[in-house]
Length: 248
Length: 223
Image (tube, rainbow over the protein chains, first blue to last red):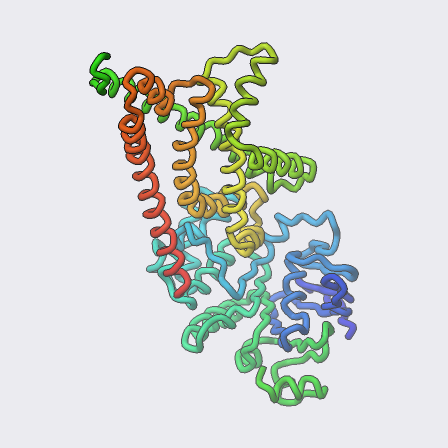
């Protein structure tokens, strides 16, 4: 699938190939995400969706193709990783909060260390982002004292504190039970309404159909189908039909 | 000393010996700890020759009895023309010995911090050294505390070998007293009691630290 390069594409992958050892995982992935758009990537385990997401933030390097993110050439060996990681925020499935720091310290760590903000400024940012995710009263708690849903929301606040241009979400509700999933999805929906450019790898089909501007279905390392949420009611390929009928 | 019994002077002598044991243990721990810290960081360095050198050092020291290390430091250095007092030779040997073991223990503790912590810190744009200093080392320190305190017990006991190079610590003090009182069983019983009194609090402390660490991990696992 060839993507037409968009003038204001914040994230653009062109013919990306990647293999782990002898195992090809991405076999020519291309898509472009304009500013302010929300894109959901769905697909089976092993389809390469998480790998594609991780390549955007250069957590994985690619074998061929190009990746442009916020003006950075991510595929280039001399890419400025520090600047890239300030422009891109990523939230992981297992939250990965720093257990030895309080919630507030988790959030203020990077703004102080990377951007050189004063403690007062960093704390103000922490307060703002915690309020945004609905956890203003948990600033002094330690991660181990919070539920999974709360920890994930803190992880989102931690990424937001760096004021990224793009947010990546790697199956962020897959480790949560249904009642905790809702509170995290609500935060993500609010971010989308606020105009944040987002890429979500998710299994939450209804959420994706409702919130995403574009859904990308990946299969066997390629972009198989792409379209708006209505696409899920009207799958064009047998693979997508199969995937949707199995519910995962 | 016709009656051959232990008197207060002997007990004082033992006490001074015990003090030297504590002194040598502290030198070994502080010196070996500093060297061990350097070794741990070199062991995980991305610079291959440095890594290989460090692995070689660790393997050689861990494969050599402390007694032999002591001999090499004391007699070997004196052959080179350095007439070292017992304390200095013993200190060098203990520092070399401790650095290899603590270096490996601490390297293991750094690597025990999950990769995902490194990743999360990397994705927040922290530099490699910032990741190490702000995220990984604080967590590694917590993991390292119980085994480090446990190893301190080994250090205290192993200082007894320094008696071989004439350094008058607790065991050597006991040997000297035996030569005049000829009551070895009683003397060594007292010495064992003193070692126990020094090591037992360390063991208890180590177990308590371990319990505290596991409790924290257990609560986190429930989240």
